[in-house]
Length: 122
Image (cartoon, rainbow, N blue to C red):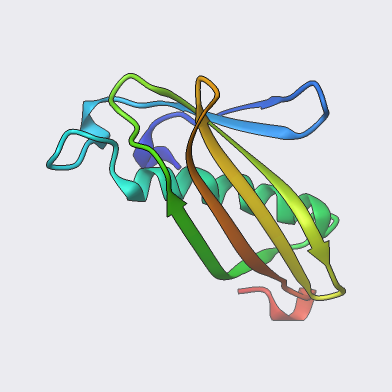
């Protein structure tokens, strides 16, 4: 995550992990909004850590991630991502995440994560 600046982590009042990023002009696309790759990276970080915690800190890999862009983010915005485990099996996790700026929904994502057994570590 070093490529997009320091990502901040905190616990919300309900105990969920929050990941935040202060955007800047280096993250903008040609039309002056924050590039979708930056938004997706922050969502992916929140999803990956939620999956890792749900898998009792075993490695997980993303099998599928779908991102929906709802609103534009701009340079200077303080973005916050939060993920929640929706369902889990012995080998798969289904995780949803929201990305907000001052309470406004910017993007959402859903992901299917695979728990990697010790002998399968990449």
